[in-house]
Image 1 (tube, one colour):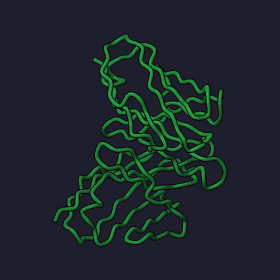
Image 2 (cartoon, rainbow over the protein chains, first blue to last red):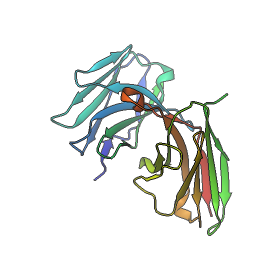
Image 3 (cartoon, chains in turn red, purple):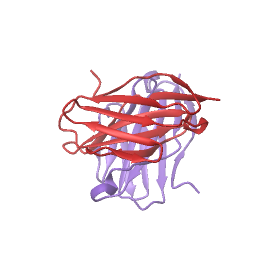
Length: 110
Length: 115
């Protein structure tokens, strides 16, 4: 079983739609959680950290459920420029490295 | 100019050849990482370094070695390349201390093909 699992998609949505991605992790000792964005043939870049109380950054909302070991990302009012692969990332302080999900691919269409 | 650079950007080589991938950074970060990315598997950590001469194995270090001779440079070597090392390789850096450790900054990637 992969340590971080994501629905690979692809998610194809029209502009203006709301779309949600889910991610589950297997290591209960995981301490920090993130969403990274990776454009086609480019490097990953940090989109947002995920806090226990949930957090919002403009049209993006991230949620964490430690009991279910589940992370989500909600994108409201999708833009064409949101088209990318979204990587769920989990960090465990015990081994001090990050584990990446395989990513969920989003395409926003006009 | 990019903060994290990788050379070469693309490389095609043959089985058994020795390959070195270079990474340089101008961010002044102490921590550097090498990952490989394969379709359907996500990024997997190969090696990481927290300081000059500090080397730590990651999730998939077999078949690879690294060298950290200077703060700004971290090189990855494949002593005898094999076809299943065909992948996209990323170098990354991060700062030290508290939340600053959480964000990793990636280079543009090196696409390696082993025939």
